[in-house]
Image (cartoon, protein in one colour):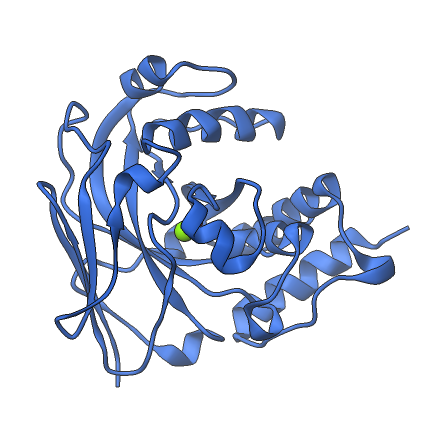
Length: 255
Ligand code: OOG
Ligand code: MG
């Protein structure tokens, strides 16, 4: 028997201390059920330390992301208030192992959503939509992991920045995005890279959390997943995601 509580402690400590760990392979390889159980236990440890749940992140919802990390299944993770970085704020490299940033779309929920829903039902549960950036930081050495590893590690979640909220009727199906470091483009793409339309990520989120006895809660945030490959952060850079029609979202890395 694998000691899932111990593994949860290992991934939680790795995230807390920004220290890389080895993958769980061989006899320790985690299947899907084990990996999500580890994730839930590691997040429970954060909640015990006083963090609050604020939403859900979807991962590997675009081909660009799947190819970058070599895992081709959609995954989800849990967001807490401690992961939020104010728009225009700063992050400190010392708190991360090897952080990367990726442009995403964020949804703010108005009504609970869970189980099998249509895109129209999903949209009806949305209060607002915003351009966003996610900071991911796999706790595994060299950012290398298998499906079970990344799920156990809360889908590499480590930070998120949300731009201005817009009405839920705002068309975000196919918006051009430029991710810039110090004014220079480092990634370009479209929100359509997210499952063809980011609303499909919200549909998938409702279905996936239901499988684990959860629902998307009113007032919570759902990050739809990276639209481009993630770009590695470096000390001192100013990061800006420019989204067609919905505006910019920015932060900087302290030097
Ligand atoms: C896994 C997390 C994926 C996304 O938006 O696709 C993710 C990783 O790339 O480390 O956050
Ligand atoms: Mg992401």
